Length: 239
Image (cartoon, rainbow, N blue to C red; front, top):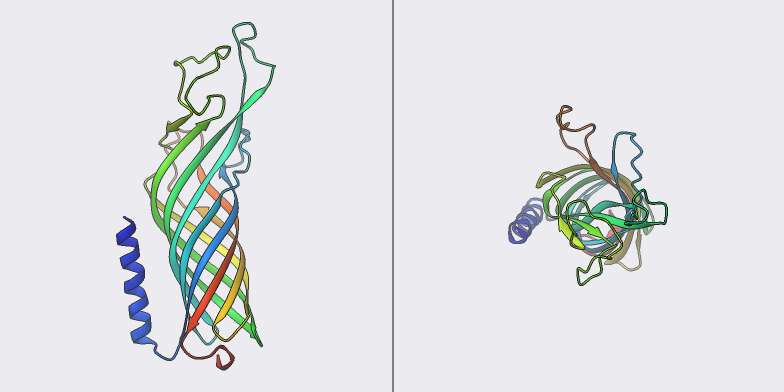
């Protein structure tokens, strides 16, 4: 899967270089701190924010005031929630909670279209985009279980003692989402720049059958893309 994604990016890059030799191409490395949770259509079931650090590589094509960017991102989304601790003496709980983490890991190809306003060596962008890719890991972490998978003896498990990490199946393998954001690109030389882009990502998926599910889970994230870029093509000051 990773090889196929890399091939698609290289193919797109080659097309851009051949078709638009007088335009600018930016190559970047991205670090993306995020706050992620699972949308439950307004139902309060105690989901809290997960705080992953995502990353990826990007390539952006700029022509006048239009910027088209893509790449490969490795992202984690999901949520944190707490479970009541129960014991043989206190089966109703009330003595504390332990954390559980839902982590959904995906390889994503983003496609963002941005409008750019430039002032000297600074650019301001507003962008919309589509994120598509493949969910390769869905996992639940139960922190009441030690890392060597030894459950506490005073906790009741109705279905037997679980493992600390368990595979789950909450989402389809194919990922599709919408993204909106604003950004700032600051050139520190003719060829080098950094980009800071706050953005919101919301998973798009069809409604689940209401006779089986009370609502449709959807992943969402608030992120800050921080990227460092190298430019080829015509000089920035002539854009």
